[in-house]
Amino acid sequence: AQTVTQSQPEMSVQEAETVTLSCTYDTSESDYYLFWYKQPPSRQMILVIRQEAYKQQNATENRFSVNFQKAAKSFSLKISDSQLGDAAMYFCAYRSPNTGNQFYFGTGTSLTVIP
Amino acid sequence: EPEVTQTPSHQVTQMGQEVILRCVPISNHLYFYWYRQILGQKVEFLVSFYNNEISEKSEIFDDQFSVERPDGSNFTLKIRSTKLEDSAMYFCASMMNTNTGELFFGEGSRLTVL
Image 1: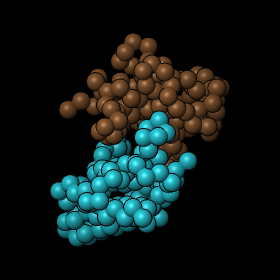
Image 2: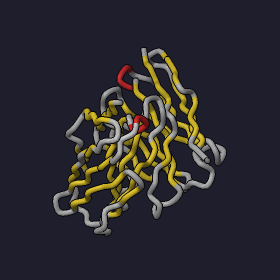
Image 3: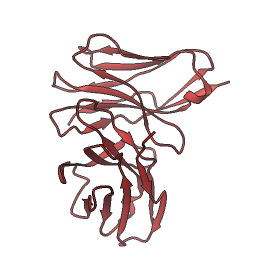
């Protein structure tokens, strides 16, 4: 099974600053999808950003962008101009179209935003 | 905006009891999932469901677990005889199709087994 590793259990960032959350994964497949999900306290996970492995261009959604390094199997999330509402648990996830579309999640990074 | 809804939000049960967790996925979605998250640990896949049958299940999803979509709207997870280690947050999720690839999650049902 694919594994997803998030090596930073906790991160903090000053409001308005930039923070990068790291994620690495292990796979032998060439075609797959990568996601970052955000889970605010006591709320459901919501999708932040998605990257298809066949696309070389890094995905961007407003203040959120990724640095996708396919050869290195790395998929980091950059949050620019951090806001208090960004405080949450962030999960990196991998999905393969070849294994029943199952999603594999990392252990998460808890992000604190300091006012 | 359509969302996945789960009930109950929290259930406390005695070991050995049966539990049913309910989910209403987004109406035009075709793929349904149950995940669980033991406190402080990663989100773990339990089972996926498509076209009225299980498409994949993990090692966690043993004979004590079952899923059903009885009426075309509800998607239930049943644990026949709960164990202490079943205590976790259970998340239901749905996906429209494999092209979009976006999972929509419910808020979760917290199960506490005493």
